[in-house]
Image 1 (tube, rainbow, N blue to C red):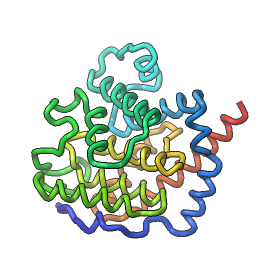
Image 2 (image 1 turned 45 degrees about the horizontal axis):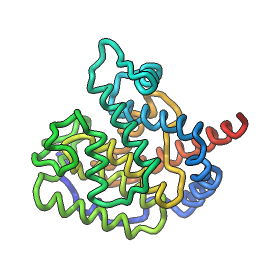
Image 3 (image 1 turned 30 degrees about the vertical axis):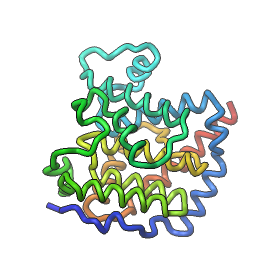
Image 4 (image 1 turned 45 degrees about the vertical axis):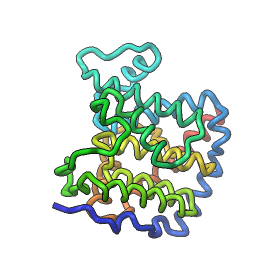
Length: 259
């Protein structure tokens, strides 16, 4: 088993100079204000963000079932109610981060978790640091830091480091991977990390990443990239995933312009 390594939280270069240039070129083709002011885009990409985030977590709702749930409140027969709750919670979180100015700090992190985890963890565990230790994470050899003062202080260090990073993409990637790595909450850590990454980019005036394609291999690639980071502290697979899917978003924006 691989124990928590505090060195992973230290700031280091993530993207190469060339990769940052590519990302900057891509984001210029996807103006954030255009997205925020377009009801069509916020609706479509909002659905994609909610649906893909749920699929990453193993949600069993199809696209059609997710749409029926979000638009008409109809749950899918024979499926766990927790799957419906996951989707509805993600919608609430997305609506908040689109409509509100949300700063990256511990208080707002707790608030976001309380939204995405509502009804999925006991109420006393909503938006608070976990009180129990995690023996391991399914699918990898990583054992997160035990609960207690050190876990609390490591989160403080993570948030301080995030604020000192200058480049928006490095900043967002650092935040996402290390929030997931720290496993600060009892559950819903990856969901919270994806939402906080969205907020980080939005706050810097950059179009956030939304997965616009739907296939199992994509969700597997995301999970494998995080496992790789958990075990090695290496961003390589995560940044490849980000760049590849950011490029696909440009295609979506250009298609939307022609409609």
